[in-house]
Image 1: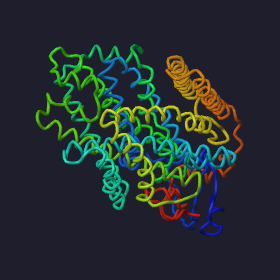
Image 2: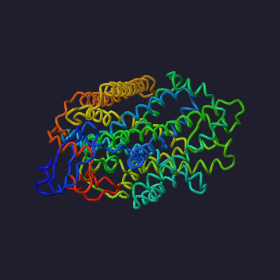
Image 3: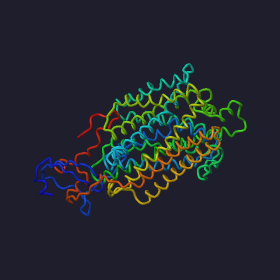
Image 4: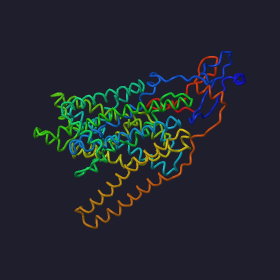
Length: 552
C-alpha cells in the first residue's frame, strides 16, 4: 500500500467489486498517518449501519406504495367487498406478497447495475421489440392514470356540488400542478406529502373498521382460503390484481433508487439493497392494511341486516362516488367531506407516480427528456379523453366500469414488463454475483405463471362465452373471431418469446482488484491522509423528477 501512496495523486480507479458494476473515484493523498483501525484478524473495521443511514434511503418505496392505493385500487377493493364479502382477501394478500417480491427485484436491479429497467430493455432488445415494449409501457401509464383522473373528478364533485363530473375530469389536468410544484422543493417534500395522504386515507378506513363490526374470523378465512364464486368473480379478481400490481411501478422503482447516494463498496451496495427491501416491506405492509380495510368495511356494512333502502342500493352498485356512506358510523355528517379529501389526495398523489414512471420510460427507451408538467399534461390529456366520454354518457356508474376495464388492461400488460425484470434480475450477465437466489427465482416465476394463467383463462373463456351468447348474426361472430383470435395468439407468442429469448447484453463485468486496495474500498475510509474514497456517483439525472441534463 505504501508503494501505491507514492503514485500520482487524484488517480481514478474504475472497478467492479463484489458484484457492483460502479465507477470508483479514489484520490490518493500522500500521508504518514497510521493505517485504519482493524479487527484482530487484520481486516479493516466497517462502519455499522444506523438509523441515519437507513433514513437516507427511505422514500422510493413510499412513493411506489402510493400507486397501490390509487383510484383503481379503491374501486376494485370496494366492489370486491360489497359484492363478494371477504372472499377476495386472499387475492389481496397474494398480490401484496407478489408486489413486495417484484418491487424488491426492481430496486435491486437499479442499485446493482446503476441503470433502471427501461435503459436495460433498450440495450437488450432489437429495435422493433424495444418500441413495442415502449408503447405498451406508455399505455400502462395511461391506463393507470384513468382511475386517478376519475377519482380526482369524483372528489371535486363531492367537495363542490356545483362541479359536474365531466367538468371535474377537465379540471384534473390543472389540479395535479400543485403536487408537481412540490418537486421544486425537492423529491423529499413530495414523498412527505404523499405519506401524509396515505395516512389520511388509512385513518378513515381503520376508524370505520371498529364501528362496522368487521369479523376477524371472516377476515382470516378470506385471506387464507382461496375462493372465487359468483358471476363475474374471475373478472373482478383480474381487475383487483391489475390494480395492485401495475407495470409502470417496476420502471418507477428501478429508477427511484438511483436518486439515492450509495457507497461504491460491495458492502455499500448490499446495505442499500437491504435498506430498500425494509423500506418497501414497511410501505407495502401499510398499503396492505389499507387494502384489507377497504375490502372489509364494505363487506361488513353491506352484509348487515339493518341497511336502509338507500344504503342497500349503494351496496348493490357501489362506486367511488357513493362509497362515503361506508364512513358515516365514525365520521357522521362530515364523512362525505373527509372521504372526498382523502380521495382527492389519493388521486393527485398517484398521478405523481405515473408522471415519474412515464419520464423514466421515455428517457430510458428513447433518450428523451421532458419537463415534469409537460409529461403530466400529455399523459393526462390522453387519459382525459375516454374519462370525459364515459363521465358524460355513463356518469358515476360508467366511470366505475371504466376503472375496472383500465385495471384489467394493466393486468394483461404486466407480462411485458415483469418477464424482462425476472430475466434480468436472474441473469449472471446482468447482475453477476448479485443475481437472485434459487428460492427467489422459483417463487417469482411460480407467482408470475399463476397470474398469466388467470389472465389467459379469463381472456379465452370470456371471449368464447361472449361469442356463444352473442345476439349478433353468425357471420358477424365468425368475422370477429377471425380478427380477435390472431391477436390472442400474438399475445401468447409474445410472452413465450420474452420468456425464452436468450439475453445477449452483459452489464456486469468482473474485474480483479488489488487486495489491499479492495480492503480500503470495502472499509469506506474517507479520512484525510488516507485513501479518500469519494461518495458513489449516483444518477444525478434521476435525483429529481424533472430531469436535468445527464451526466457524462
